Length: 598
Image 1 (tube, rainbow, N blue to C red):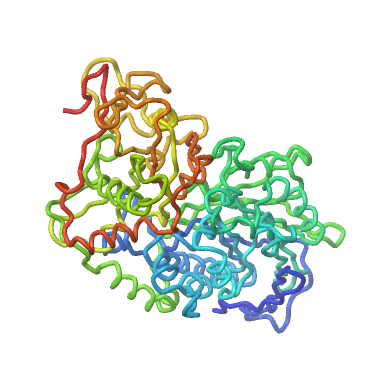
Image 2: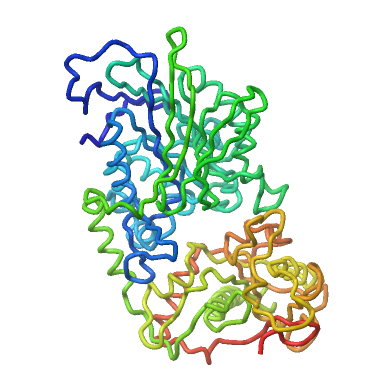
Protein backbone atom coordinates (compact mmCIF):
# COMPACT_ATOMS: atom_id res chain seq x y z
CA UNK A 1 0.00 0.00 0.00
CA UNK A 2 1.37 3.40 -0.93
CA UNK A 3 1.72 5.51 2.22
CA UNK A 4 3.93 8.39 1.16
CA UNK A 5 2.76 11.19 -1.11
CA UNK A 6 4.71 13.73 -3.12
CA UNK A 7 4.35 17.39 -2.28
CA UNK A 8 4.79 20.47 -4.47
CA UNK A 9 5.21 23.70 -2.49
CA UNK A 10 4.74 27.20 -3.86
CA UNK A 11 3.88 30.60 -2.41
CA UNK A 12 3.53 29.12 1.08
CA UNK A 13 0.67 26.82 0.01
CA UNK A 14 1.11 23.07 -0.40
CA UNK A 15 -0.65 21.29 -3.24
CA UNK A 16 -1.12 17.53 -3.14
CA UNK A 17 -0.99 15.40 -6.26
CA UNK A 18 -2.13 11.77 -6.01
CA UNK A 19 -1.43 9.46 -8.90
CA UNK A 20 -4.63 8.19 -10.47
CA UNK A 21 -5.18 4.47 -10.16
CA UNK A 22 -2.43 3.91 -7.61
CA UNK A 23 -4.48 1.23 -5.88
CA UNK A 24 -7.07 0.50 -8.59
CA UNK A 25 -6.53 -2.78 -10.50
CA UNK A 26 -8.62 -1.66 -13.49
CA UNK A 27 -6.87 1.69 -13.92
CA UNK A 28 -5.90 0.87 -17.50
CA UNK A 29 -9.51 1.35 -18.62
CA UNK A 30 -11.13 3.96 -16.35
CA UNK A 31 -14.85 4.48 -16.72
CA UNK A 32 -16.33 7.80 -17.83
CA UNK A 33 -16.79 10.69 -15.43
CA UNK A 34 -19.34 10.14 -12.70
CA UNK A 35 -21.68 12.68 -11.11
CA UNK A 36 -21.22 11.41 -7.54
CA UNK A 37 -18.21 10.71 -5.34
CA UNK A 38 -17.41 10.02 -1.68
CA UNK A 39 -14.11 10.91 -0.02
CA UNK A 40 -12.95 10.34 3.57
CA UNK A 41 -11.00 12.51 5.98
CA UNK A 42 -9.31 10.88 8.98
CA UNK A 43 -8.33 13.18 11.84
CA UNK A 44 -6.42 13.01 15.13
CA UNK A 45 -5.73 15.65 17.74
CA UNK A 46 -3.74 16.24 20.94
CA UNK A 47 -1.32 13.32 20.58
CA UNK A 48 1.03 15.03 23.07
CA UNK A 49 4.15 13.08 22.24
CA UNK A 50 2.48 9.68 22.25
CA UNK A 51 4.03 7.45 19.63
CA UNK A 52 3.74 3.97 21.04
CA UNK A 53 0.99 2.67 23.32
CA UNK A 54 3.27 2.93 26.34
CA UNK A 55 3.12 4.60 29.74
CA UNK A 56 6.60 5.90 30.52
CA UNK A 57 5.54 6.83 34.05
CA UNK A 58 4.49 3.24 34.83
CA UNK A 59 7.11 1.59 32.60
CA UNK A 60 4.40 -0.60 31.11
CA UNK A 61 1.85 -0.67 28.29
CA UNK A 62 -0.73 2.08 28.67
CA UNK A 63 -3.97 1.17 30.41
CA UNK A 64 -7.03 3.09 31.56
CA UNK A 65 -10.41 2.08 32.95
CA UNK A 66 -12.22 2.72 29.66
CA UNK A 67 -9.90 0.35 27.82
CA UNK A 68 -8.85 3.08 25.39
CA UNK A 69 -5.42 2.86 23.81
CA UNK A 70 -3.01 5.65 22.85
CA UNK A 71 -0.34 6.54 20.36
CA UNK A 72 0.32 6.98 16.67
CA UNK A 73 1.20 3.31 16.26
CA UNK A 74 -2.44 2.42 16.94
CA UNK A 75 -3.60 5.27 14.71
CA UNK A 76 -1.49 3.89 11.87
CA UNK A 77 -3.44 0.62 11.83
CA UNK A 78 -6.76 2.49 11.75
CA UNK A 79 -5.57 4.54 8.79
CA UNK A 80 -4.35 1.40 7.00
CA UNK A 81 -7.71 -0.28 7.40
CA UNK A 82 -9.71 2.67 6.08
CA UNK A 83 -7.36 3.09 3.14
CA UNK A 84 -7.71 -0.59 2.32
CA UNK A 85 -11.50 -0.37 2.48
CA UNK A 86 -12.00 2.89 0.61
CA UNK A 87 -8.93 3.11 -1.60
CA UNK A 88 -5.86 5.15 -0.72
CA UNK A 89 -6.73 7.80 -3.30
CA UNK A 90 -10.02 8.63 -1.50
CA UNK A 91 -8.53 9.13 1.99
CA UNK A 92 -6.86 12.20 3.49
CA UNK A 93 -5.25 12.18 6.95
CA UNK A 94 -4.84 15.27 9.14
CA UNK A 95 -3.75 16.17 12.65
CA UNK A 96 -5.16 18.95 14.78
CA UNK A 97 -2.18 19.97 16.89
CA UNK A 98 -0.43 19.54 20.25
CA UNK A 99 2.03 16.90 19.16
CA UNK A 100 5.45 18.14 20.37
CA UNK A 101 4.95 18.01 24.15
CA UNK A 102 3.47 15.69 26.71
CA UNK A 103 5.59 12.58 27.35
CA UNK A 104 9.14 11.86 28.50
CA UNK A 105 9.87 10.91 24.88
CA UNK A 106 8.98 14.35 23.53
CA UNK A 107 10.76 15.97 26.48
CA UNK A 108 13.93 13.94 25.93
CA UNK A 109 14.30 15.00 22.30
CA UNK A 110 13.61 18.62 23.17
CA UNK A 111 15.83 18.96 26.24
CA UNK A 112 18.06 15.98 26.98
CA UNK A 113 19.15 15.18 23.43
CA UNK A 114 17.57 18.03 21.46
CA UNK A 115 17.06 17.41 17.77
CA UNK A 116 17.89 21.08 17.19
CA UNK A 117 21.48 20.20 18.12
CA UNK A 118 21.83 16.63 16.86
CA UNK A 119 20.02 17.10 13.58
CA UNK A 120 18.23 13.79 14.15
CA UNK A 121 14.67 13.33 12.93
CA UNK A 122 12.15 14.06 15.64
CA UNK A 123 10.41 10.80 16.62
CA UNK A 124 6.98 12.38 16.25
CA UNK A 125 7.87 13.43 12.70
CA UNK A 126 9.06 9.90 11.98
CA UNK A 127 5.76 8.48 13.22
CA UNK A 128 3.54 10.88 11.28
CA UNK A 129 5.56 10.25 8.12
CA UNK A 130 5.35 6.48 8.56
CA UNK A 131 1.56 6.82 8.53
CA UNK A 132 1.54 9.34 5.70
CA UNK A 133 -0.28 12.42 6.99
CA UNK A 134 -1.38 15.12 4.59
CA UNK A 135 -1.49 18.17 6.88
CA UNK A 136 -1.56 19.30 10.48
CA UNK A 137 -2.02 22.51 12.41
CA UNK A 138 0.10 23.75 15.29
CA UNK A 139 -1.37 23.59 18.77
CA UNK A 140 -0.40 25.78 21.70
CA UNK A 141 2.05 23.18 23.01
CA UNK A 142 4.09 23.37 19.82
CA UNK A 143 5.59 26.57 21.25
CA UNK A 144 6.64 25.10 24.62
CA UNK A 145 10.17 24.33 23.51
CA UNK A 146 10.68 27.41 21.35
CA UNK A 147 10.46 28.22 17.68
CA UNK A 148 13.72 26.49 16.77
CA UNK A 149 12.33 23.08 17.73
CA UNK A 150 9.11 23.78 15.87
CA UNK A 151 11.16 24.71 12.81
CA UNK A 152 13.21 21.52 13.09
CA UNK A 153 9.99 19.52 13.20
CA UNK A 154 8.42 21.28 10.22
CA UNK A 155 11.63 20.65 8.28
CA UNK A 156 11.41 16.95 9.15
CA UNK A 157 7.84 16.10 8.21
CA UNK A 158 6.63 15.38 4.68
CA UNK A 159 3.44 17.42 5.04
CA UNK A 160 2.71 21.11 5.68
CA UNK A 161 2.29 22.35 9.25
CA UNK A 162 -0.34 25.08 9.17
CA UNK A 163 -1.16 28.15 11.26
CA UNK A 164 -3.12 30.89 9.52
CA UNK A 165 -3.41 33.05 12.64
CA UNK A 166 0.25 32.67 13.67
CA UNK A 167 1.86 35.84 12.36
CA UNK A 168 5.45 36.96 12.00
CA UNK A 169 5.78 39.80 14.50
CA UNK A 170 8.09 41.77 12.22
CA UNK A 171 6.06 41.56 9.01
CA UNK A 172 2.53 40.72 10.06
CA UNK A 173 2.51 37.95 7.47
CA UNK A 174 1.70 34.30 8.28
CA UNK A 175 4.61 32.65 10.05
CA UNK A 176 3.39 29.25 8.83
CA UNK A 177 1.46 28.21 5.71
CA UNK A 178 -2.15 29.25 6.35
CA UNK A 179 -3.72 26.49 4.28
CA UNK A 180 -3.08 23.63 1.90
CA UNK A 181 -4.93 22.62 -1.28
CA UNK A 182 -5.05 18.92 -1.98
CA UNK A 183 -6.05 17.48 -5.34
CA UNK A 184 -7.79 14.16 -4.77
CA UNK A 185 -7.88 12.21 -8.02
CA UNK A 186 -10.12 9.15 -8.01
CA UNK A 187 -10.14 7.16 -11.27
CA UNK A 188 -13.22 7.87 -13.35
CA UNK A 189 -13.94 11.17 -11.60
CA UNK A 190 -13.02 14.77 -12.04
CA UNK A 191 -10.39 15.78 -9.43
CA UNK A 192 -11.66 17.12 -6.13
CA UNK A 193 -9.83 20.01 -4.50
CA UNK A 194 -9.88 19.85 -0.72
CA UNK A 195 -8.81 23.05 1.01
CA UNK A 196 -7.56 22.67 4.59
CA UNK A 197 -7.12 25.78 6.73
CA UNK A 198 -5.25 25.69 10.05
CA UNK A 199 -6.07 27.83 13.09
CA UNK A 200 -4.74 27.61 16.64
CA UNK A 201 -5.82 28.99 20.00
CA UNK A 202 -4.22 32.39 20.68
CA UNK A 203 -3.42 31.57 24.31
CA UNK A 204 0.17 30.73 23.32
CA UNK A 205 0.89 34.45 23.40
CA UNK A 206 0.33 34.21 27.17
CA UNK A 207 1.41 30.69 28.06
CA UNK A 208 4.66 30.80 26.06
CA UNK A 209 5.35 34.51 26.12
CA UNK A 210 9.06 33.95 26.75
CA UNK A 211 9.34 31.81 23.60
CA UNK A 212 7.22 33.86 21.21
CA UNK A 213 7.21 37.50 22.31
CA UNK A 214 8.66 39.74 19.62
CA UNK A 215 8.85 36.86 17.16
CA UNK A 216 5.32 35.65 16.48
CA UNK A 217 1.88 36.97 17.31
CA UNK A 218 -1.49 35.21 17.48
CA UNK A 219 -4.43 36.71 15.66
CA UNK A 220 -7.98 36.19 16.84
CA UNK A 221 -9.17 32.92 15.30
CA UNK A 222 -12.50 34.30 14.13
CA UNK A 223 -10.82 37.25 12.44
CA UNK A 224 -8.36 34.94 10.71
CA UNK A 225 -11.16 32.62 9.58
CA UNK A 226 -13.12 35.54 8.15
CA UNK A 227 -10.08 36.44 6.05
CA UNK A 228 -8.86 33.03 4.95
CA UNK A 229 -11.98 30.88 4.51
CA UNK A 230 -13.19 32.88 1.45
CA UNK A 231 -9.74 32.58 -0.10
CA UNK A 232 -9.74 28.81 0.38
CA UNK A 233 -13.38 28.48 -0.67
CA UNK A 234 -12.70 30.14 -4.03
CA UNK A 235 -10.11 27.48 -4.83
CA UNK A 236 -11.58 24.34 -3.24
CA UNK A 237 -14.56 22.06 -3.66
CA UNK A 238 -14.42 21.04 0.00
CA UNK A 239 -13.33 23.34 2.85
CA UNK A 240 -12.05 21.81 6.09
CA UNK A 241 -10.82 23.86 9.04
CA UNK A 242 -8.37 22.36 11.52
CA UNK A 243 -9.17 24.30 14.69
CA UNK A 244 -6.91 23.69 17.65
CA UNK A 245 -9.51 25.10 20.04
CA UNK A 246 -12.63 23.96 21.77
CA UNK A 247 -16.19 25.22 21.63
CA UNK A 248 -18.23 27.46 23.89
CA UNK A 249 -16.16 30.61 23.76
CA UNK A 250 -14.46 29.92 27.09
CA UNK A 251 -11.00 31.20 28.06
CA UNK A 252 -8.82 29.93 30.89
CA UNK A 253 -6.79 33.13 31.00
CA UNK A 254 -9.52 35.68 31.67
CA UNK A 255 -11.70 37.70 29.30
CA UNK A 256 -9.30 40.54 28.55
CA UNK A 257 -5.92 38.81 28.42
CA UNK A 258 -6.12 37.59 24.81
CA UNK A 259 -8.67 36.70 22.13
CA UNK A 260 -11.08 33.90 22.99
CA UNK A 261 -9.41 30.57 23.64
CA UNK A 262 -12.19 28.26 22.37
CA UNK A 263 -14.18 29.84 19.51
CA UNK A 264 -14.56 26.88 17.12
CA UNK A 265 -18.35 26.93 17.23
CA UNK A 266 -18.37 30.72 16.74
CA UNK A 267 -16.38 30.27 13.54
CA UNK A 268 -18.75 27.55 12.32
CA UNK A 269 -21.77 29.73 13.08
CA UNK A 270 -20.56 33.04 11.65
CA UNK A 271 -18.10 32.30 8.82
CA UNK A 272 -19.74 30.92 5.64
CA UNK A 273 -18.08 28.41 3.33
CA UNK A 274 -16.90 25.72 5.77
CA UNK A 275 -17.96 22.10 5.27
CA UNK A 276 -16.29 20.47 8.29
CA UNK A 277 -14.16 21.46 11.28
CA UNK A 278 -11.84 19.37 13.41
CA UNK A 279 -11.95 20.43 17.07
CA UNK A 280 -9.15 20.01 19.63
CA UNK A 281 -7.31 21.45 22.63
CA UNK A 282 -9.95 20.54 25.24
CA UNK A 283 -9.31 16.77 25.27
CA UNK A 284 -12.96 15.81 24.88
CA UNK A 285 -14.43 12.84 23.03
CA UNK A 286 -16.97 14.52 20.73
CA UNK A 287 -17.10 12.63 17.42
CA UNK A 288 -19.96 14.57 15.82
CA UNK A 289 -21.96 17.72 16.35
CA UNK A 290 -23.44 20.28 13.98
CA UNK A 291 -23.59 24.05 14.06
CA UNK A 292 -25.98 25.97 11.82
CA UNK A 293 -24.22 28.73 9.89
CA UNK A 294 -26.13 31.97 10.28
CA UNK A 295 -25.22 33.23 6.81
CA UNK A 296 -25.96 30.18 4.66
CA UNK A 297 -28.42 28.33 6.87
CA UNK A 298 -26.41 25.16 6.30
CA UNK A 299 -25.04 22.82 8.95
CA UNK A 300 -21.30 22.60 9.58
CA UNK A 301 -20.10 19.29 10.99
CA UNK A 302 -17.68 19.49 13.93
CA UNK A 303 -15.68 16.46 15.05
CA UNK A 304 -13.31 16.17 18.00
CA UNK A 305 -11.16 13.05 18.17
CA UNK A 306 -10.32 11.90 21.67
CA UNK A 307 -6.91 12.91 23.01
CA UNK A 308 -3.67 10.92 22.74
CA UNK A 309 -4.80 8.91 19.73
CA UNK A 310 -7.57 7.12 21.61
CA UNK A 311 -9.82 7.69 18.60
CA UNK A 312 -9.55 8.69 14.98
CA UNK A 313 -12.37 10.82 13.62
CA UNK A 314 -13.72 9.56 10.33
CA UNK A 315 -15.39 12.27 8.26
CA UNK A 316 -17.14 11.09 5.10
CA UNK A 317 -17.90 13.74 2.50
CA UNK A 318 -20.44 13.08 -0.25
CA UNK A 319 -20.10 15.13 -3.44
CA UNK A 320 -22.16 15.59 -6.58
CA UNK A 321 -21.43 17.54 -9.76
CA UNK A 322 -23.53 20.57 -10.59
CA UNK A 323 -22.80 22.33 -13.88
CA UNK A 324 -19.42 20.63 -13.99
CA UNK A 325 -18.40 21.57 -10.43
CA UNK A 326 -18.33 19.49 -7.28
CA UNK A 327 -20.84 20.38 -4.56
CA UNK A 328 -20.85 18.89 -1.06
CA UNK A 329 -24.15 17.09 -0.55
CA UNK A 330 -23.52 15.52 2.83
CA UNK A 331 -20.98 15.27 5.66
CA UNK A 332 -21.02 12.69 8.45
CA UNK A 333 -18.54 12.02 11.25
CA UNK A 334 -17.88 9.15 13.62
CA UNK A 335 -15.18 7.96 16.02
CA UNK A 336 -12.96 4.94 15.29
CA UNK A 337 -11.48 3.66 18.56
CA UNK A 338 -7.85 2.68 18.24
CA UNK A 339 -8.05 0.08 21.02
CA UNK A 340 -9.64 -2.21 18.45
CA UNK A 341 -6.49 -2.17 16.29
CA UNK A 342 -2.95 -3.47 16.81
CA UNK A 343 0.08 -1.22 16.77
CA UNK A 344 1.37 -0.56 13.27
CA UNK A 345 4.77 -2.26 12.76
CA UNK A 346 5.94 0.53 10.46
CA UNK A 347 5.40 3.16 13.14
CA UNK A 348 6.99 0.94 15.77
CA UNK A 349 10.05 0.43 13.58
CA UNK A 350 10.36 4.11 12.75
CA UNK A 351 10.39 5.07 16.43
CA UNK A 352 11.98 2.03 18.08
CA UNK A 353 15.35 3.61 18.86
CA UNK A 354 13.81 6.80 20.30
CA UNK A 355 11.43 4.74 22.43
CA UNK A 356 14.20 2.53 23.80
CA UNK A 357 16.38 5.56 24.58
CA UNK A 358 13.52 7.18 26.47
CA UNK A 359 12.80 4.02 28.48
CA UNK A 360 16.46 3.89 29.59
CA UNK A 361 16.37 7.58 30.54
CA UNK A 362 13.22 7.46 32.67
CA UNK A 363 14.36 4.37 34.55
CA UNK A 364 17.53 5.99 35.89
CA UNK A 365 17.58 5.88 39.70
CA UNK A 366 18.17 9.37 41.12
CA UNK A 367 17.51 8.93 44.87
CA UNK A 368 16.10 6.78 47.64
CA UNK A 369 12.83 7.69 49.33
CA UNK A 370 12.68 7.14 53.08
CA UNK A 371 9.04 6.13 52.77
CA UNK A 372 6.31 5.76 50.17
CA UNK A 373 4.81 9.11 49.20
CA UNK A 374 1.55 9.50 47.29
CA UNK A 375 -0.26 12.37 45.60
CA UNK A 376 -3.66 10.65 45.82
CA UNK A 377 -5.03 13.08 48.42
CA UNK A 378 -3.20 16.18 47.20
CA UNK A 379 -6.34 17.88 45.82
CA UNK A 380 -7.83 18.14 49.34
CA UNK A 381 -4.94 17.71 51.78
CA UNK A 382 -1.44 19.07 52.27
CA UNK A 383 0.72 16.14 51.18
CA UNK A 384 4.48 15.62 51.64
CA UNK A 385 5.03 14.74 47.98
CA UNK A 386 3.74 18.16 46.90
CA UNK A 387 5.74 19.79 49.70
CA UNK A 388 8.82 18.35 47.97
CA UNK A 389 7.98 20.53 44.95
CA UNK A 390 7.32 23.55 47.18
CA UNK A 391 10.60 23.12 49.04
CA UNK A 392 12.69 22.88 45.87
CA UNK A 393 11.02 25.95 44.37
CA UNK A 394 11.45 27.95 47.60
CA UNK A 395 15.11 27.04 48.05
CA UNK A 396 15.96 27.73 44.40
CA UNK A 397 14.46 31.23 44.47
CA UNK A 398 15.75 32.05 47.95
CA UNK A 399 19.32 31.18 46.95
CA UNK A 400 19.08 33.13 43.70
CA UNK A 401 17.95 36.30 45.51
CA UNK A 402 20.87 36.39 47.94
CA UNK A 403 22.60 39.75 47.75
CA UNK A 404 19.68 41.42 45.95
CA UNK A 405 17.16 43.96 47.22
CA UNK A 406 14.68 41.11 47.68
CA UNK A 407 16.93 38.96 49.87
CA UNK A 408 15.12 39.85 53.11
CA UNK A 409 11.60 39.22 51.82
CA UNK A 410 9.90 35.94 52.81
CA UNK A 411 9.76 33.44 49.95
CA UNK A 412 6.48 31.61 49.43
CA UNK A 413 5.80 28.94 46.81
CA UNK A 414 2.84 27.93 44.65
CA UNK A 415 2.21 24.37 43.45
CA UNK A 416 -0.81 22.43 42.21
CA UNK A 417 -1.71 18.72 42.15
CA UNK A 418 -0.89 17.70 38.59
CA UNK A 419 -1.45 13.97 39.09
CA UNK A 420 -3.44 12.03 41.68
CA UNK A 421 -1.65 8.82 40.70
CA UNK A 422 1.91 10.07 41.26
CA UNK A 423 3.96 8.19 43.84
CA UNK A 424 7.50 7.95 45.15
CA UNK A 425 7.96 4.32 46.25
CA UNK A 426 9.88 3.54 49.39
CA UNK A 427 13.39 2.85 48.15
CA UNK A 428 14.62 3.67 44.65
CA UNK A 429 13.13 6.76 42.99
CA UNK A 430 13.63 7.12 39.24
CA UNK A 431 13.36 9.93 36.73
CA UNK A 432 9.97 8.58 35.70
CA UNK A 433 8.70 8.78 39.29
CA UNK A 434 9.57 12.47 39.43
CA UNK A 435 8.26 13.06 35.91
CA UNK A 436 5.03 11.38 36.97
CA UNK A 437 4.67 13.92 39.76
CA UNK A 438 5.58 16.97 37.69
CA UNK A 439 4.11 16.18 34.28
CA UNK A 440 4.46 19.62 32.68
CA UNK A 441 7.58 21.21 31.20
CA UNK A 442 7.22 24.41 33.20
CA UNK A 443 10.05 26.72 34.17
CA UNK A 444 10.43 28.47 37.53
CA UNK A 445 9.81 32.17 38.02
CA UNK A 446 9.18 34.40 41.03
CA UNK A 447 7.23 37.61 41.56
CA UNK A 448 6.47 39.96 44.41
CA UNK A 449 2.96 40.09 45.85
CA UNK A 450 1.42 41.98 48.74
CA UNK A 451 -0.43 40.32 51.56
CA UNK A 452 -3.72 41.49 50.08
CA UNK A 453 -2.80 39.98 46.71
CA UNK A 454 -1.83 36.67 48.37
CA UNK A 455 -5.23 36.50 50.03
CA UNK A 456 -7.04 37.38 46.80
CA UNK A 457 -5.03 34.70 44.98
CA UNK A 458 -5.94 32.03 47.53
CA UNK A 459 -9.61 33.00 47.46
CA UNK A 460 -9.63 32.57 43.69
CA UNK A 461 -7.95 29.17 44.02
CA UNK A 462 -10.49 28.05 46.63
CA UNK A 463 -13.25 28.25 44.00
CA UNK A 464 -12.03 24.73 43.20
CA UNK A 465 -14.28 23.32 45.92
CA UNK A 466 -18.01 22.83 45.82
CA UNK A 467 -19.77 23.95 49.03
CA UNK A 468 -19.68 21.35 51.79
CA UNK A 469 -22.84 20.37 53.66
CA UNK A 470 -23.24 22.05 57.03
CA UNK A 471 -23.33 18.75 58.93
CA UNK A 472 -22.64 15.07 58.52
CA UNK A 473 -19.79 13.07 57.09
CA UNK A 474 -18.37 14.28 53.79
CA UNK A 475 -15.98 12.73 51.32
CA UNK A 476 -13.60 15.57 50.35
CA UNK A 477 -13.09 14.01 46.92
CA UNK A 478 -16.71 14.91 46.11
CA UNK A 479 -16.02 18.60 46.73
CA UNK A 480 -13.24 19.02 44.17
CA UNK A 481 -13.43 20.27 40.57
CA UNK A 482 -16.27 22.74 41.08
CA UNK A 483 -18.16 23.76 37.96
CA UNK A 484 -17.82 27.45 37.07
CA UNK A 485 -18.78 29.32 33.86
CA UNK A 486 -15.26 29.26 32.41
CA UNK A 487 -14.81 25.59 33.35
CA UNK A 488 -18.15 23.88 32.57
CA UNK A 489 -16.55 20.47 33.03
CA UNK A 490 -15.12 21.44 36.40
CA UNK A 491 -11.99 23.29 37.49
CA UNK A 492 -9.09 20.92 36.73
CA UNK A 493 -6.75 19.82 39.49
CA UNK A 494 -3.87 21.71 37.93
CA UNK A 495 -5.78 24.94 38.55
CA UNK A 496 -6.01 24.38 42.30
CA UNK A 497 -2.97 26.22 43.62
CA UNK A 498 -1.64 25.60 47.12
CA UNK A 499 0.68 28.03 48.87
CA UNK A 500 3.58 27.12 51.14
CA UNK A 501 5.35 29.48 53.53
CA UNK A 502 2.12 30.78 55.07
CA UNK A 503 -0.55 28.96 57.07
CA UNK A 504 -4.26 29.12 56.31
CA UNK A 505 -7.55 27.25 56.42
CA UNK A 506 -10.01 26.81 53.56
CA UNK A 507 -13.56 26.85 54.98
CA UNK A 508 -15.61 25.01 52.37
CA UNK A 509 -18.91 25.95 54.01
CA UNK A 510 -18.34 29.61 53.21
CA UNK A 511 -19.22 31.26 49.90
CA UNK A 512 -16.60 31.69 47.22
CA UNK A 513 -14.55 34.80 47.94
CA UNK A 514 -14.54 34.47 51.71
CA UNK A 515 -13.15 30.99 52.30
CA UNK A 516 -9.58 31.76 53.42
CA UNK A 517 -9.39 31.87 57.22
CA UNK A 518 -6.46 32.54 59.53
CA UNK A 519 -3.93 33.50 56.88
CA UNK A 520 -0.68 34.05 58.76
CA UNK A 521 3.08 34.17 58.36
CA UNK A 522 5.47 33.21 61.13
CA UNK A 523 2.60 33.07 63.59
CA UNK A 524 1.26 36.55 62.79
CA UNK A 525 -1.73 37.53 60.63
CA UNK A 526 -0.69 38.57 57.13
CA UNK A 527 -1.10 42.32 56.72
CA UNK A 528 -2.48 43.69 53.47
CA UNK A 529 0.70 45.71 52.86
CA UNK A 530 3.12 42.88 53.67
CA UNK A 531 5.48 41.97 50.83
CA UNK A 532 6.41 38.50 49.71
CA UNK A 533 8.41 36.87 46.97
CA UNK A 534 6.34 34.05 45.46
CA UNK A 535 7.84 31.18 43.45
CA UNK A 536 5.54 30.11 40.63
CA UNK A 537 5.70 28.26 37.32
CA UNK A 538 5.81 30.17 34.05
CA UNK A 539 2.37 28.96 32.92
CA UNK A 540 0.68 30.44 35.94
CA UNK A 541 2.83 33.57 36.02
CA UNK A 542 1.99 34.31 32.39
CA UNK A 543 -1.74 34.25 33.14
CA UNK A 544 -2.73 30.61 32.66
CA UNK A 545 -5.79 29.88 34.77
CA UNK A 546 -6.73 33.53 35.13
CA UNK A 547 -5.43 33.89 38.71
CA UNK A 548 -5.56 37.51 39.89
CA UNK A 549 -2.50 39.71 40.20
CA UNK A 550 0.10 37.17 39.15
CA UNK A 551 0.54 38.05 35.47
CA UNK A 552 1.12 41.75 36.20
CA UNK A 553 3.26 41.29 39.31
CA UNK A 554 6.93 42.38 39.18
CA UNK A 555 9.16 39.47 38.16
CA UNK A 556 12.23 39.12 40.38
CA UNK A 557 13.49 35.72 39.21
CA UNK A 558 13.40 34.00 35.83
CA UNK A 559 16.43 31.91 34.94
CA UNK A 560 14.47 29.58 32.63
CA UNK A 561 15.16 26.54 34.81
CA UNK A 562 12.76 23.66 34.35
CA UNK A 563 11.05 22.73 37.58
CA UNK A 564 11.08 19.02 36.81
CA UNK A 565 14.84 19.14 36.24
CA UNK A 566 15.29 21.05 39.50
CA UNK A 567 13.42 18.26 41.30
CA UNK A 568 15.64 15.64 39.68
CA UNK A 569 18.79 17.57 40.57
CA UNK A 570 17.68 17.97 44.22
CA UNK A 571 17.05 14.23 44.44
CA UNK A 572 20.44 13.47 42.92
CA UNK A 573 22.30 15.93 45.14
CA UNK A 574 20.79 14.75 48.43
CA UNK A 575 20.47 11.09 47.51
CA UNK A 576 17.57 10.75 49.93
CA UNK A 577 14.00 12.07 49.79
CA UNK A 578 12.84 12.27 53.40
CA UNK A 579 9.63 14.12 54.34
CA UNK A 580 11.23 15.03 57.65
CA UNK A 581 13.44 17.43 55.71
CA UNK A 582 10.70 19.38 53.92
CA UNK A 583 7.11 18.42 54.77
CA UNK A 584 5.12 21.13 56.58
CA UNK A 585 1.35 20.88 56.97
CA UNK A 586 0.47 24.54 56.51
CA UNK A 587 -3.08 24.41 55.10
CA UNK A 588 -6.22 22.35 55.66
CA UNK A 589 -9.89 22.14 54.79
CA UNK A 590 -12.24 23.17 57.59
CA UNK A 591 -15.97 23.40 58.22
CA UNK A 592 -17.05 26.16 60.58
CA UNK A 593 -13.54 26.30 61.94
CA UNK A 594 -13.19 22.56 62.55
CA UNK A 595 -10.96 20.28 60.43
CA UNK A 596 -12.98 18.57 57.71
CA UNK A 597 -10.61 15.61 57.68
CA UNK A 598 -9.76 13.53 60.74
